[in-house]
Image 1 (cartoon, one colour):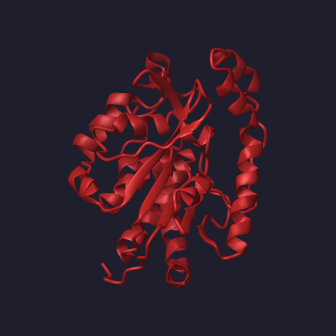
Image 2 (tube, rainbow, N blue to C red):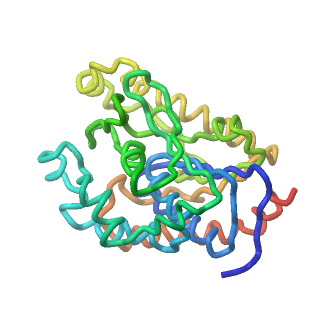
Length: 289
């Protein structure tokens, strides 16, 4: 560990989701831990939220291992689970057994972190994003689960009397929210390369049928690609002006959204780690401005 720190007031860290592409983010965050890069606020979406908690618990390599150690197990993620339970990722195994038994999560370190951590979730009835704070990653695990509950592959997660799904549907990259909350500097970790633009989903008709009781959610699914692409333009414009710092893959990541190959995951983890290491000095300069 290096003792060098890059800490200023109101630094935000925004973590995009992207399923297994989040392994790129795991590599970035481990470099941050190694170099003692510190922020004030962290906002994660879907896989970005699930991996981001390991940054606050200061557990290097756990983000990678908590996925890679289990990807080939049917009880973790499988279409068998989807048919049997309605969730591709089985709730007990994925969200309780892994953090509590197989790859123990350091919840005490997380709870004592000075960093405020929020996860993005999509309210299926209102069609609005919500940004609850995670103060305890074990007792608040259902918020994290809601953030990562992908449409069609997950049942809606009930929190109180409301139902939620994947935070990325309403706010895939919550940079505007981070700025609105007062973060003067923002580090944005994306899981797509710069050339990527989202296209309209072919699941529109299925969405209308499956989520017909939630018309505002259906509308979100319909407009997601345009909103996402506008957010990217906003991000790249701020980056050009030097107002934010972006870390992303330089080339498309050759991973499926649900990837079963551990070697491919390790390769993408290393890409994330090495990209963050390459950009580290530039990041320090940005934070010290």
